[in-house]
Length: 151
Figure 1: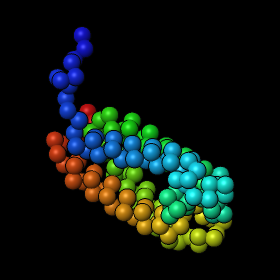
Figure 2: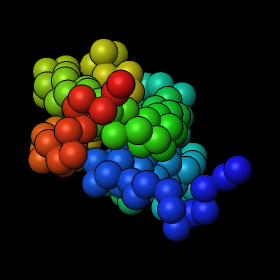
Figure 3: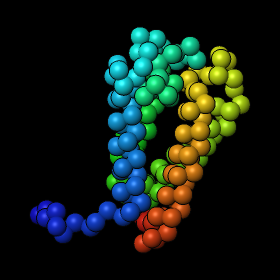
Figure 4: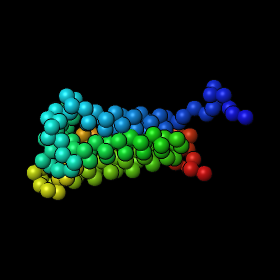
């Protein structure tokens, strides 16, 4: 016997946040492949600082960069299935974005090490995303014992 939708447990706020971010990352990943929304689309490289394509004319992207956004989005949607998974997605995902922020600031934008690629706008967006994701995990994960719901 299945439980009617009205009787299913409501998603915890941490799950809703992870699901929303997952959807945003999916949309961003798809938009990175759309000419016009991504400027200089003809210069889109697989993975290189030489990719001149920019999402919204601001954030440097490559095929690899777009695929990472799609993977991050799918992970968010999958992990939003449980409160513990959503908490982990936000906390670990935020930490990864802070590492990307430091990496982006550390490597030269014209360096071969900048293979993703990242520009200044990407760097600071990664900082904001990292802080926001960790903040959401900590703020929303405290409710209903989210961190111990993994049982």
